[in-house]
Image (tube, rainbow, N blue to C red; front, side, top):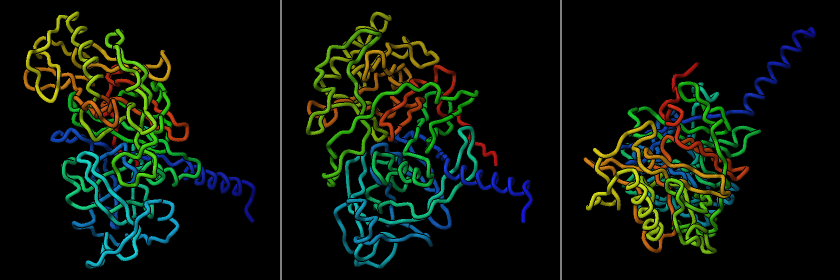
Length: 435
């Protein structure tokens, strides 16, 4: 029989083990591909574990990986069409493969439509399960890899990789879907709900380090020199778009992240807009979403015209005159020699996105607005046409060096505005392991 002291130590030890397993937090590094201006998330997949680079897609439902080229693993499993998991995925499709059996090729399989959200191309791929591993974290450093059995994803093919960042073999899905990466990681911790944060690195802050994604933790998120970015967050509701979009599984709601922009200001001057364009209609058209699959912000033609006219007028008040021939695809450019660089990027008019309440706004500074093209700085907004599905699509540039927290339980987005204001950036997370 154990004496009281030994019993107490055992109870404390067991409590510590259980508590730590129920509060597991993770992180993955993010890099920027300068050839596409898109982002790559890195994790470990297969047995033995292999470093796997995937395009970070905020709006995708289910991770997919190219299974047609050198997919080797001793732990992969196919999913049959009549298994409970397939029914829960609700893909509505199944099929057979009559080629040589292997990864992505089996009979009576559960299938899915993997999508390349850059080119809008889709394919049919079989659902697989395999081992995954990601780093745990305390919010300050990575603390070693944790293996996760039976990660669910879809097979894609090599053709579907066109237009994605160099070196990726698929897409990491971070969207609002029960089997996206954040949701599956949340199921590994008994007390966790689907909550994650991303901090995209920039190619303009003079650093070449990694950005970071955090999973299963509301903070802390520490960036050198000791800045906890979770303390900087302002919150606004996440809005569910009833439309699925271009993927053929039309009976599921959109997995993309929408927020309610109610007004736009330039240097605190209101932009006159057709407010119906800012709202999502019953067919799912309109509104504002956040995307990591477009480098620049895409805007409805009417909204772009109103915003750029106000931006040019406010720039004139700062002694900045737009060039006569802007560099395509941009509509407004300024001579670089006329613009002073500041801690938050080029000194140009700031844009405020007024959100669900008049006092809640997202301020966008020059570093997230302007694109350097040779001897000019251009406003990084692109014409999305007169009938786009979404009126405003925040591209990657607008959210670089901003911490964004997606709290799917409370249906809200937390945003920090530019971390450059605090003399830090998304590449300042310390990836040195403490183990």
